[in-house]
Image (tube, rainbow over all chains, first blue to last red; front, side, top):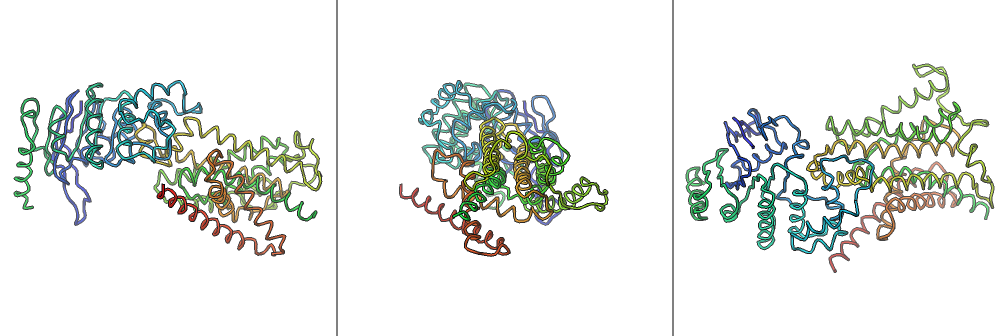
Length: 257
Length: 315
């Protein structure tokens, strides 16, 4: 489904600040997997997501997606098959448009944006049923400008929007990190519901170790551009937050933090 | 009394004329957040295109559409410089409007029978007697030129054109393409996630903005009866001030469309200039007054925003 092959990436090459993150990084994700990725800051989690989505290009190596080499494909072309929800709740929706307008745009994804009417009143009922799944009452606020929603509501809407198109992969980029504990619980629950329903291959970066263990089918811990833990199945089910914390601490001692 | 009426006539006519420029700025400045200086060149380009075509006997309404297309093309150049080469918005506008000084001059001279070296003819285009302008052809020629001191012919024609421009923009902004344009200004990343190239949307927005500026330029030529190579100067201030006055004075009215606010803003701005003239301020001071009015509009708009924020905080 998705494979990183011999990825090399150095930031600020040729300057005193040069730092090599990926030095022959390899990872394969199979179809239908829901992978949680954890790791300390600077371990390469977000860079990995940026490489998948195309907001960053590797120095060398290949990114294979659905059997095709997408290393040179532009970000917006990849977005046809890859959905993304960001940590920043402002990124996944458009603040100056209403909920209805946001959904109408998403409904038209991968189609022509021509000179026909943007909002089709016949689709409103469909949008309402999608929003009802969030259980936030958003279905009654279609005319509300998205900028006036709370972070949790915006993130839930971003999830709904990302799932409106038939996608091959969903990227969740610390998408609960900016939310309060209750909202982040709700959004995570909603995420799981969506992923289960559509069986979409998902890649979720999170700092929440409990989420990483509880949700998903595979768990990866990254450190300095390498996957140092990669567990699935029973092994993952039996892992505990303490186990993961122990590994974290061991690494920290090794690097002298 | 008649002085007052004739000033009112000029204020309304100029207001409608510049409202179209301000609507262009609504697209580039308000929606896309792009401070576009290209209009100093494209207003004149629109005027040159209109003037030459009308002199050549082309139907003035078709000439008006052609001037839109000319502005559209030059606006797209600004957009492409920005998205393809990564040049900052202000510099893109300066580059294109500077280049347009030569383009407009040479096209004018060539159109008037001169050479491509830019000499051999006048650099002005005169729409004298016998040239079938907007007002001298159907349907505007059916209206009276003097109606209780108002030049109804010109006033109604300009109002109708401003209204058509407003309605077209309103309709466009409700289409899929228009909604995508609004999303581009609000959150370009969202457009990328919709698998659309947000760079193309930006180019399109700047093209539309400058197309409107060029139509405004065509009306200026229609109104003055000639093309003058200096007529683009000060257009940034007129357009932006009209836009900002309109949006800050009427911004609180929910049912009013921004395009309507912009038309009122343009008229208010021209009214302030008209009052200054009535008070006897010499026309040499016009640009100072324009700049001062713009400053007041800016201060007013930030004050309105603060007030709005306080109100919001109280609720």
